[in-house]
Length: 187
Image (cartoon, rainbow, N blue to C red; front, side, top):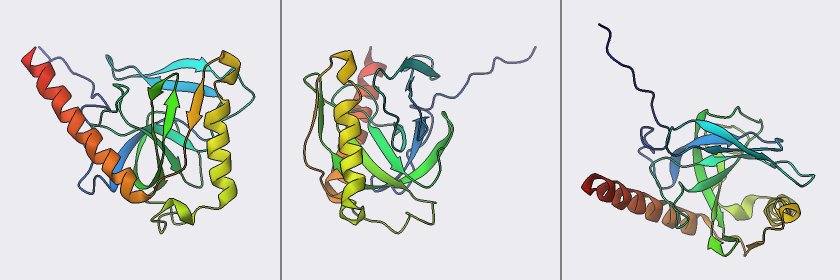
């Protein structure tokens, strides 16, 4: 008899990578230019359609999560990855944290790591969010401030923070994830 195969879970089974917290693997849920909000189903590990955005906006860059991390919202850390091309939902790539956008989503902390693709020749040299053009930062901020307005959901953002703060948040997310795993094993 053949043994039962178990599919890999992108949150738990994908390594974060040896360069973390500065350079890490991330799973892309939503490709740049999409109006569809895909999201990790934490139980199955599959990427599911959460909704079509209610506003006339599209994701300005590839968007996903960092495996083996946990944010204060009890989800894997969110990451917006700036690169030349959109990539398909469910793939993973190496990203380099260049900044952090503090965000509150309906009263809950939901910070966004801002990263560049570590293997994209146009962006891989960047080391800090201050290297991005001011208009790019304005577009990113505006997207997150507006994308839930037509759902009557309140989102607020704060000033962008540097790569050092982003690495600290990734490191904290790695620690929270480790605590979460230990707690689940105790149950």
